[in-house]
Image 1 (cartoon, rainbow, N blue to C red):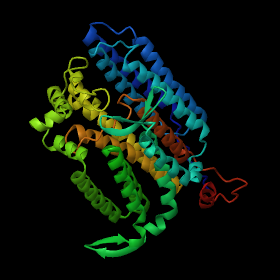
Image 2: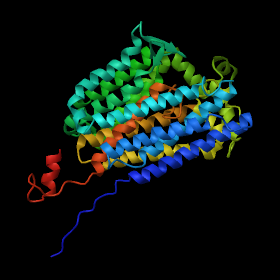
Image 3: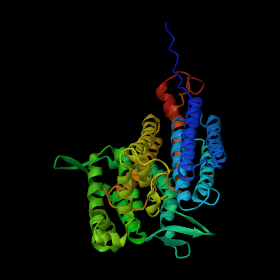
Image 4: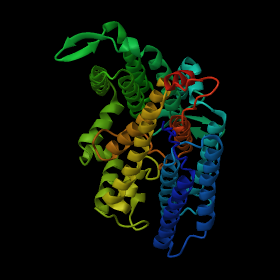
Length: 460
């Protein structure tokens, strides 16, 4: 009689550490290259910057060894590399605007990176099991929608560049919608796990497509109405699109019904057209999108035209780090950091960045597939989709695929709230992946027969 030995997956922490070191080396070389190109010498802050950034990533690796040893070993290196490259470009723009490392945006971004990584590590330590979040499904709904509405409070809300999406407290500005997307993903996952059976029930068949029952359309109509509310009252096209798109994507994952995607697309198209007819700021975004180089559009804003011309100047291989003029584009370190990379790294560099984001999303979806509980599957898929949607909205906006929205590029753009949200998102994915990759316990007192089905039920 042969004995089958169960396969224990590799933890991958040492491979993760090597990838982290490789990522920091790439960032350090890019940082030195910027200094040589702009100032003709290696930046004096290179050692401090590189060692500080390496310490942040290694500390996170140690937390994973302690609290999540089976977590996916590629998520942290990808986040580290993207975050580091964003710091390099922000430093390059600081030099162009006469700011030194200590008093520029790059130093503040490094501090925010350390704080964001520390908070993400704290999430891993406190959150021992992602399934605990399901207990707070409706609390997450209240908190998430509350964060979306927070900028509308007169004392706290602050309008920047025409959008009412910021709050200002004690000299600090914060964008609560960045945190809201994670909390709402928790709510959507918990809600859809409870209701997916009802939402999957077939209704009438129209044009070869089986539509859901009319009484089950309530959730998607509510999400549609709330997303329109964000668009109308906060003038935030990006958050509105991200919020509604996230719900529709998770609804499709939960029910596997293409009809929900079709209904979501119809509702989104109807809402977008109505918003275009009713609101001037939406009409301006459409003007900049369709007629970027006309006198009327350039009078309203030359930002998109400047970004496109910068990417055109970069061509296939780019001008080289520190040798372009991305600083001519307004908000080049935040909303338009992707065109800044396009000018100095070219199309090849942009494809490399998009490949990193694609890999990040793929690992999130792989985590969703491998997770053994329904809530974890939906939450991991929702978090992965939120990154994919945000990247699409930002890149689509700066390349004229869709109108500009004002969202920031995850990990790359300057901004503390975006870093905090995206590092926390990665921490939750790491926690779920640790559960997904951890071997199922063998037969013991709780499962004397070794029945795998019984053991999985017990884990749930």
